[in-house]
Length: 367
Ligand code: UDP
Picture 1 (spheres, rainbow, N blue to C red):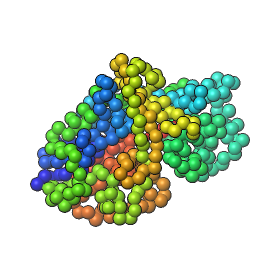
Picture 2 (cartoon, rainbow, N blue to C red):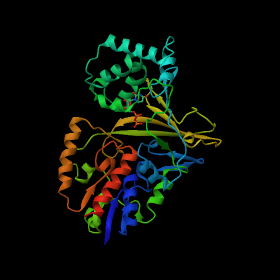
Picture 3 (cartoon, protein in one colour):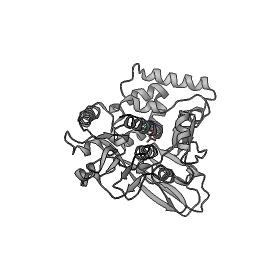
Picture 4 (tube, helix red, strand yellow):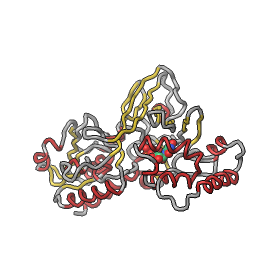
């Protein structure tokens, strides 16, 4: 009998495993995949650490969390400065003075950029933004909306911007300085040598079994431990009793190229609607790689169906209500707690994931 069974060896499960094992508890971690790490998993291809389930850039404003992850890996000085490609034009992101001065020939100063955006906003007269389109126009005006937001967002979410909630776009900073750093956070970086190594260190004090699917032997696994931390999809755990929660899924088309540098940047977003992928990741640039070849991944966004990998929870009103039903059911499970992006149906950044896992452990140890 283990003290804890942790289902899922992603970031959330790995932090829980480390903390519980260090507190003297016996811990078994199972994962249905053939590798540890969940979606932060990286694997070496041609000597390059490839983020197989999408790019992960750790960023935080919380010094304690930054120091915490620093115990398991050395973080490099990567700063995310994505570039947007719209037809034959290239712009810096997030929206900043580099973007504005390239878009408009007569804009050179912050005051001119602000005046230009204000006049566009007035032309469209958006008073209180009710959806993503109106929110975007009120933030940056129609020109930027049409070139850099509309197509990308509709591809990513599979719905028109007029049917999407305004809050999604508020993730993106708008700045009147020449600053291409995508995040506002104080600290960011990529673990040198990849995330898998970092996760392996977190799991070092627990027993780990791969290719082990909890749902195939639910009763057997439940009997193996006093407490269970479940990081898989909460609706799947309850056999989709109230119906499936919606997710956006992503298909990655990976290519190894015999050239040293394909796009000169880790992330290039393709914002036109007629390009079928949303972005191309060139993995070597996350670690300033100097390998002779390169590996790129095109990202195609898709509606999730059963059997696909779930990526982004669709946190709209309908799905939030459905999640609440599952959450109420979860409270009735006496020895299982649910955590992480899939267990809590929440679009967690990595720092939020670590914080949530630490809070979970604290609550478990206080029981
Ligand atoms: N977005 C956009 N154009 C871009 C990049 C982002 O309009 O070139 C919008 C889009 O609505 C997207 C949101 O900003 O859903 C958040 O994008 P982000 O890149 O932060 O998402 P993630 O990297 O987490 O997939």
